[in-house]
Length: 475
Image (cartoon, rainbow, N blue to C red):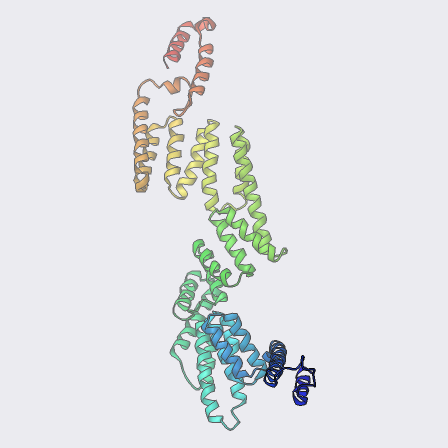
């Protein structure tokens, strides 16, 4: 409307004015042109704003599949994978039967390491090409179909789905050596697994995963390998492989259970508890995780109560609680072996030397350790079996790692001194205290024995009492 009014004014020319109001015609033309220019600018701004809104609201919907693919490629170069995926999916919605869109999405998903999605994309691309082979470009489409199928078959091998890969090559009337060998080794692994031949299963699964299924997205094969490792006692292998599964599939309940059980077997109770609880967060009624958590609580509860009783000097109660913990699973050696040594120390504190030696021999006979042999030597010394004690300390020195050699040498020297002293007057025996007795315990025993053997209290056997009192004082 501003432009119309300005044009009308220009057409009519300047109105009749009084002499004082009249202006030159050139100035009048300049004013009219300025009005036209300002009106034009206003119109341009309004038009631009409307156009921008249209672009934001509707233009993306109107983009062609080719333009969307270009936007996806740009996003891909900038490593904006999520944006690129969105553009490719929009292109698919525009051209759902164009196999090229699915093939480009396959490449993107493979780059993102979303191999399951990539397999779905290349499968769809193959199906679309097969449907279009009857068209005018049937020869070209057939070649493209064969190319895509080879890509799919290779991906299947890399994902450990070797039988499917062999079938894919058969549909092309081709034989691929990698796919055939992979299928053979995978079948051998599955057969060994089903027959509980765990060592062979581990070997064959390892072969498949190392030489063929190299992409790492193989949860089923990895889980079966983990189970085989668990059954042969390779708990560190189980932890490593289930960790790989959980990295890609953080809701894999069976992996949480198996990993928790492996940590439990290694006596790493805190880590075992963590994995059982993670599984129960995902499914509070998961039987495996519930049972694992129940057993763990039963073991750790008795173990901690036993430790508390020992600290209070309630040694018999401590022994009972520790045996209660061990009997939950007596074959759980990573827990039983160190707990058995705690039982030995409780018997030693009770001066039950024969029982202490018996329990300690169970530990040593199962598997020699420096700690076990040292405790056995201490028990034997307390029972005045000095020669046996020296042999135990010497054996510990023989098997000790380099960083413990010096400590073991000192123990051997102490045992040699004890053996020599045993052939002389044994002051520890006179005071009825062990060689590792504390000063407080020595003084207490001295006072009790001095009162017991004081000559004034033993008038009927004064000569023996005087000798004993003298030995006690000397000791």
